[in-house]
Amino acid sequence: MTEKQKMLAGELYLASDPELAAESLRAAQLLQRYSQTIAGDRQSRTAILQELLGRVGESPQIVPPFHCDYGIHISIGDRFYMNYGGVILDCNQVQIGDDVLCGPYVQIYAASHPVDPAVRRTGLELALPVTIGSNVWIGGGAIICPGVTIGDNTTIGAGSVVTKNIPSNVVAAGNPCRVLRSV
Image (cartoon, rainbow, N blue to C red; front, top):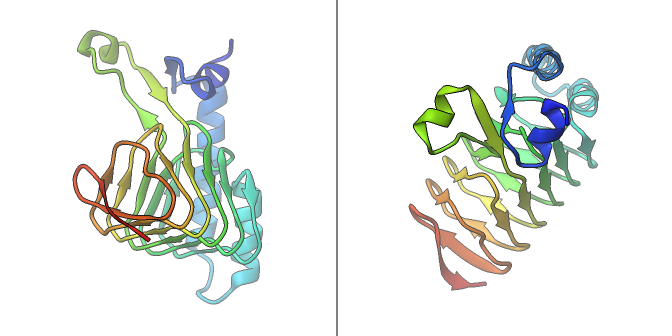
């Protein structure tokens, strides 16, 4: 398996691999272009997002600055909105449904590192997919951890750290994030 195949399979991989380094550089260059677009120039921003991301639904809005690792592993549905300072570490697939709203400084992490310090020192990394359903609102400063799924119609409170799956049709918040009530 290539390092990229290992990464997408959730196995230990080396991020310094030349193929991954080239894809990361491509993303960094596109993100730089995106950050330099004029506010309100939705046509240019959408065109760059379509080049950067794996899938882009209708009417996306991502307010710069925005950061991601590769971009190509991110799929966003229709009417996706991400406020200032969004981060999506897409070392594995990040699937986001329609009508998802992200407050400022939301961070979505597919990237992880080994817990064993000896393995971590080797430079090997891990990544697990993240799935966010449709009609989800993620409050500002929330962190979505690797391997998490958030169901449809759910609200994640500001500042939450989502370490485990959250079902559909709930309000959840806290560190660690937990279900507070049904919607």
